[in-house]
Image (cartoon, rainbow, N blue to C red):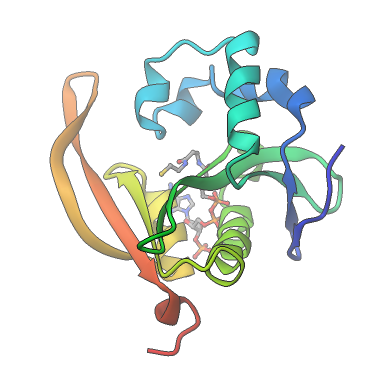
Length: 179
Ligand SMILES: CC(C)(COP(=O)(O)OP(=O)(O)OC[C@H]1O[C@@H](n2cnc3c(N)ncnc32)[C@H](O)[C@@H]1OP(=O)(O)O)[C@@H](O)C(=O)NCCC(=O)NCCS
């Protein structure tokens, strides 16, 4: 069951339904998806493990992304770590249903989540990490307003190649275009 917690035009963000563990497991065994997600690419994800992961994530401001027209689950996004003292957090997102890539869903889901993070969770700075080959993701993050702040060089192995991990962040004022 999904609930319209944060609602956009294309999608809404709902608390995670633990019954979706099988669908998430299917996506997290798709190397075309997980190549973008760091250690998940070389990890082992089965339904039992995924249920535990979802149980944990569901308590930590992680949300399912649901297509607003069909109420179909398409992915997940949320805060990986929240540091309330310094008002900072790291964010992550993946759309597992590849039919929905490149159609604006990721941008909208992030705008909903970040607005919630700044206004409801009282955050000031939000960080994310993306690998240098992931042009679609970087374009999406730039549209939201993230800026590149640095990179860790050659931090990811894919086959015989090494890629940089790029760090991007956004401040409250930048998101609301006050600066
Ligand atoms: C990254 C992700 C969340 C982005 O969401 P999305 O809905 O696909 O992205 P959007 O459509 O909102 O924005 C992507 C932009 O990149 C463009 N784009 C699409 N494919 C591209 C490609 N191969 N190279 C460059 N740009 C591309 C799109 O045209 C769009 O820009 P536009 O609106 O100016 O046309 C989603 O693609 C995804 O989950 N991918 C797999 C997992 C992943 O990479 N997660 C992020 C890990 S850091």
